[in-house]
Image 1 (cartoon, rainbow, N blue to C red):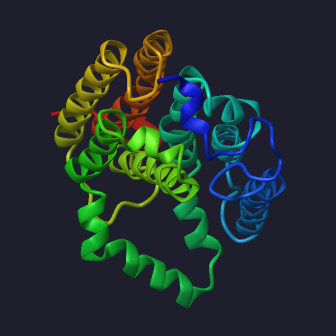
Image 2: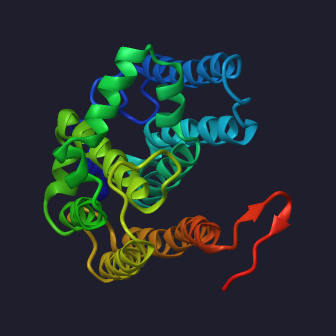
Amino acid sequence: MKNDHLVHHLPASGDPAVTLGGFSQPLLALLFATAIILYIVAAKQTGRHYRRWPVSRVIYWIAGVLFAWLSVAGPVADRAHTDFTAHMVGHLFLGMLSPLLLVLAAPMTLMLRTLPTEAARRLTRLLKCRFSRLMTHPVTAAILNLGGLWLLYTSDLYSLMHTYPSLYLLIHFHVFAAGYVFTVSMLYVDPSPHPHSYQLRSAVLLVFLAGHAILSKFIYAHPPAGVPAEQAQAGGLVMYYGGDAIDAILIFFLCLQWYRSVRPRQKGGRKLRQS
């Protein structure tokens, strides 16, 4: 089966009419540009009442939105319809790199600062509810993230999503949402109503890394339906080494937070001695 069969019902590469589940490229560009503009406006507004919002977080947000946009529009997304290697690059952008950058931008903290009081209270109650507790538990988030990827690449789901645009949109949304929730469950940049120990998060992360690496090797040896062997091998390598590079950044920030949580506190400019 040639890879071209995967795109039989999808628009041709470069077609500006439809790109992701019926969304045109101009509309997608408008949505992502709006996300950037709203964040910048909120960052400026909160700086009038609280401590100035860090520029680094603004940069994280812009980069995260741009990588998400690259994965669903533009040349990478167009080529992903017929090239599994490009698809895997988009997967890394949408499911790993973009969520990591967006989490580092602390969007929930910014929303709580800028929303009206009653709206901020509703958001806080939503973050504290049982559903939120369940979804942001490290084990649940890892199962949703890794389990979804195994299901996508080891079943007919990968070929089906290239047949039905609505399924294509749903799967891309899941990849992003699962990646974001998993990153939130690992890094506590925003306030976390349901915190878990560093030991638990580290253990779950190690299992996730192993499962992600095994899946990339499985794809290398067992191409998804409709994907030529050479493209599957190249895509598996991209997933393996690209995933490791992004995971290294995630591990760095997790270890940095852990170190800061246990290091001796400073008081009055003097460092306290550990007993």
